[in-house]
Image 1 (cartoon, helix red, strand yellow):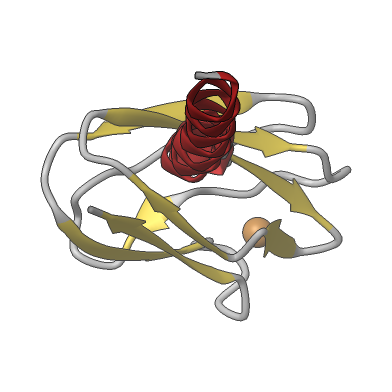
Image 2 (tube, rainbow, N blue to C red):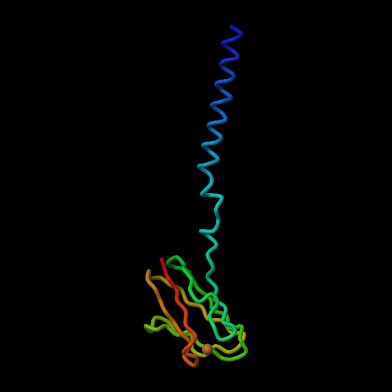
Length: 119
Ligand SMILES: [Cu+2]
C-alpha cells in the first residue's frame, strides 16, 4: 500500500512538472509585447526621416514630428497624403487604412525619403 502511495505521488509530481513546462511554453507568445508596441512615430531631424522605414498595422495613425530647425514636408510619392509645410516643432498625422507600401519624400529636399509599410 505504501509503495502504491509513493508511486502515485511521484507520478503526480512528474505530471505537474510536465504540465507546468507545457504551460510555460504556451504562455511565451503572450509575454512578448513587441507586437503591440510597434513604433508609429517618425522624427524629422538633420534633414532625414528617422526611422526612414516603418511597418504598421492597417488603421494605425502615424505621426511625423519636425524636430529640425527648418521647414519640411511629408509628401506621398503617389499623392496618398500630404502634410503641407511643417515648421520646426510642428507635427503631421495620417491614418493608414489600406494595406500596402507608401513611399514619401520632402518636397524642398529631394534627398529626404521614407517609407511606410502597412500590413
Ligand atoms: Cu525637408
